[in-house]
Image (cartoon, rainbow over all chains, first blue to last red; front, side):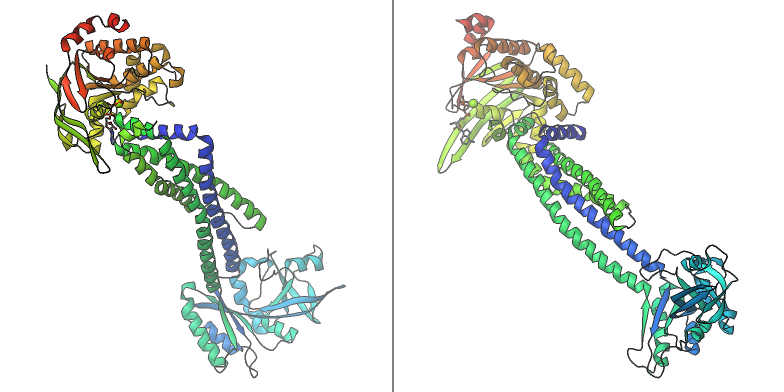
Length: 390
Length: 242
Ligand SMILES: Nc1ncnc2c1ncn2[C@@H]1O[C@H](COP(=O)(O)OP(=O)(O)OP(=O)(O)O)[C@@H](O)[C@H]1O
Ligand SMILES: [Mg+2]
């Protein structure tokens, strides 16, 4: 019976090609806009959050402007921070700009950052060659440096920089490592910086205070209690004065972005759903016309023994066919739009099973919801009236 | 011979505005297996109304109608559909073939609702179309067939499920005289093969092909001149021509 119903539905769809096509178009536009919007928003969100997590979802960033009396964090504060539960390490960053000299080459305005051993432990794969800053470098204020990849190329022209000596702000510094080329992120790249032990960097750059510290968490799920403890330490360090520091958790930012884009997805999908609704009304309209046109046929089928449920099924299958067809085409076109957008906007493109289930499910539901009333109307036709209708 | 349908005091009333219209007034009718009955009456006498009730397309206002041991009053929509499918074959004045299906598919239609397997459907439909002389035209669509041929397809469709009765409402009404005769001959042959036929007509000459005539006038039934009918039936052709 189902097979016959499908055959009948198909023959009717084929028989009214133009009308069926236009109705399919209605659903197609609805489904494709939903799919395209959701995929684009998800893709864009994915690329933003992955950029942010590449900055470290497992760390808390502290910016301490401090008070007039205490303009930054002391060694003791760092030590206290490193003792907080579930903290695996603390990495201060001091930064400044200065001139580099290698042989005859002079580069001005080079960004120099002071880091510690914790940083290189955590970001092990940031090193291309050589070694990073170690504990001894930090403790002994060793004049060593790790070069960004572009800087290494510019100064050494393919020669091995490791073991060579540079003048950083007039101090002789030994190069111990070279960083990998980084693709760069919204926070800038590390390709043309020099990293030194923060202790020696402070001396070289004349920086007296540590204002930037990354606190690495051993368990990112405990971020809340860690932030609490960190805040307590910082508060006591700055005498409970307001606006002396900020504590930033990458995960929080990711969560906020996730919330915003989640709402954006819902909003856009909601707007796109309106076009699907219009498509559904198109189906209903077409089916109602179809029922009226085929009144005699329905009457005849009933006279020949079609049960109301069988008539209903026949018409319902027809509307489901139309909407599924629109749904599948809409899925394909929506994904094509998303692919083009992903190329133009440079984000990675992913098709989830959900997208497909959503498209197929939504369109089938539209077919059923908007096909039901016409199908019921057909099944309830009085066969005598229907047969008389010529 | 066994009785296949029995109508007792069937009344059909329509209320139009304030007025009441009694279309069928206490109809009593018994029909046995193998009969060929004409229901003869002028226009507006209630023939089609009676046929609709006989065919379970409509239910009477009051009265008892037993069809093949089923009390029609007790049946719901779905069961009525089953009864129509199983017990009744309809032949309409305007053929009522689906234009989008060819002759073979039109004949297969009632078997779909009888849940006959596709292979059996095809086999039976081909056999019955051969029987009505349309072996060559099985794949023609209705608009590729003459009126007489279309009515043959409709007749093939009505008997393919081997119903208890074949109900025909003015089956020759849309055909010319000669084609009408051929259709009546087909009915006669089907009846000779044992098929029970009830035919509705306003044409006395057509009614004479049957074995029994029942007259209907203003909603009342009366048995017609059966002897005369029998005699004409024997040499129906000559009578029809004169
Ligand atoms: N649904 C209805 N509502 C009201 N009156 C109806 C209805 N159907 C039929 N009638 C009336 O019942 C009467 C009999 O109609 P019916 O169709 O049975 O006549 P008939 O004998 O078949 O006539 P014809 O030979 O012209 O087909 C007519 O007067 C008609 O107006
Ligand atoms: Mg009539």
